[in-house]
Length: 485
Image (cartoon, rainbow, N blue to C red; front, side):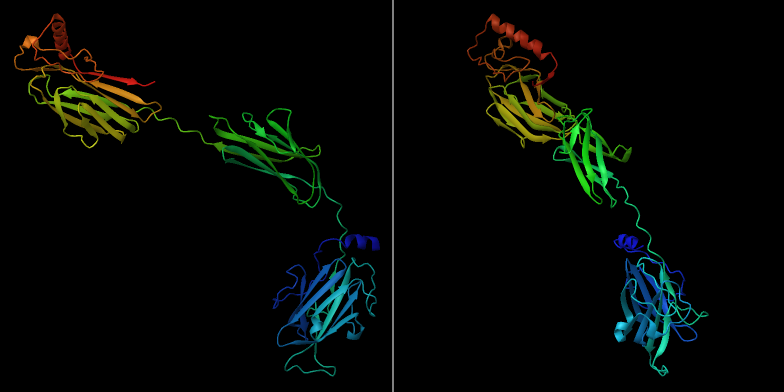
């Protein structure tokens, strides 16, 4: 019996059960044991008046008692008797094993078992066995008629209608349970951190016992090259990791961190499964996690850019005037960026800008326009005005080019104007009208220079050029778009 008592003394706090249940009253004092012990009223007089509270807590081989009296009552003295069996009679106060006076009458911490037993009590020697307690209190209160010995008497655990004493009984402390087996739980989280897919597997043992031979199997996404924690190795497949944890103490936990860097273009959801085994048993826990790697947005398509250039007339007498109307339009999708328009205008003409001068300028015969961004659906119109020199007869050919960005590749588009026939120069007959310089063509490729015809010379070559110019003058404007490599 003593060996069992010693073995169980190390047990945690034992919940106490009263074998005889006293009538309960509303508590007027807080439970000093935090609600873990037994509560009993302290009752006095023939009607069992509730004058206070008693609390009992058994922890191993110690019985603790705390008592409180309702004001204005105060303690004179108290007595506690212990017996191995329920009390059948009131024990005289002087025969109880324990007593306290004054303020000390409300608090006891008694080592079990006591050294002696009163007459009417039953001895016991097992500190963890069943026993009963009888508690009586002598108290004073204003207006209380004192007896010859002084004060009034009250008992803890007394109920009206039974003999005038209390008997509060405690059961034996149960034998300690055999050592249990630990277990293991697994939880998994995933995150995309600084370009890496990271899974963290937390293995924990929520019990107070050791979990033996813990093994974690982790099925990793097979398309990534993984960096493993030191407890883990790959196998039998390249995407399955085995982690030998060994013994995991009660209450302990361990984090296993797996990381991988997706290659360029690898994106989407990466899923992971983890199972935990103890010894050779089936999986004790399973967990799942997923990480979403954002995919880069699809590249914006090249914006559709339209460029046209039209003369105000295709037949004109000097000195003009002549006007070109150039239109730039972004038909989308998206903005056209870093838009640069260049146009080498015909020589022999005094050029100026009408509308559109906010983004364009002319330096001699070179027209340049720039816009950092032209939004989807926006178009710009440019008026280019010129006064022709009296000697500037011939055929004026002209083209403008727009270079732009905004898509995967830079773009370029060229607009070729209809040729303009200039006549009316002094001393020059219509048949002697000269064509542009050999560097000019109807398809563009730079500004056309009007030849100086003051010398009045002509040749079969010039005649052929004039005929060619008239053919070009009858053609429609050519618009072509080319993409830069």
